[in-house]
Length: 158
Image 1 (cartoon, rainbow, N blue to C red):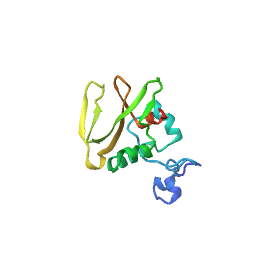
Image 2 (image 1 turned 90 degrees about the vertical axis):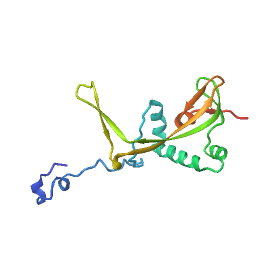
Image 3 (image 1 turned 180 degrees about the vertical axis):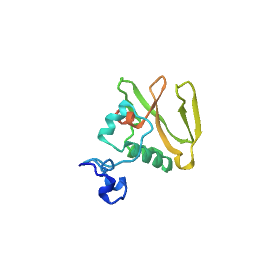
Image 4 (image 1 turned 45 degrees about the horizontal axis):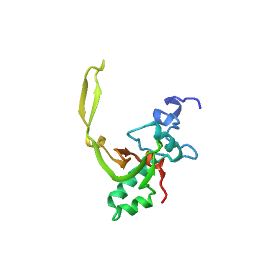
C-alpha cells in the first residue's frame, strides 16, 4: 500500500494515514501480549506446540498454591512423581516450589558499559510474576526442573 501523506487525509494526522498491521493476529495462532522473562532453547520446542506456555505455567502455579489436595492436583496435571531423565537417571519428585518475583527497579548501562544507572520503577511499570520449579532427587542430588523439562520426562509406570 503506498504511503499517504497527512494532507491527503484532511490533516487528521499520521496515525490515521498509515494502515498498521503489527497488531493483527497471525492466522491459526492465538494472539498473545505476555512477554516471558526467560527464553531458553528447550522452551522454544514446547512453545511451538503450545504458544501460551507462560500462561499455562502461571495458571498451574496459581492453582497449585490454592489446591486443597496438592498430590491430586499434580496427578490431574500429569506431573510424574517418578520419572527417567534424558541421561537415564531415575528421578523422584520431592517438592514443588512457587516463588513470587516483583521487579521494582531497572539497571541501564552507561555509555561505554563501565558503570550502571539504577532507577526505581513507577507503579505502572512494576513487573510481577511467579516462578515454578519442580525439585526431583536423582539418587545423589536435587535437580530443579521447570515445567518444560518436566513435560519432557518419561514417567515410570508401576
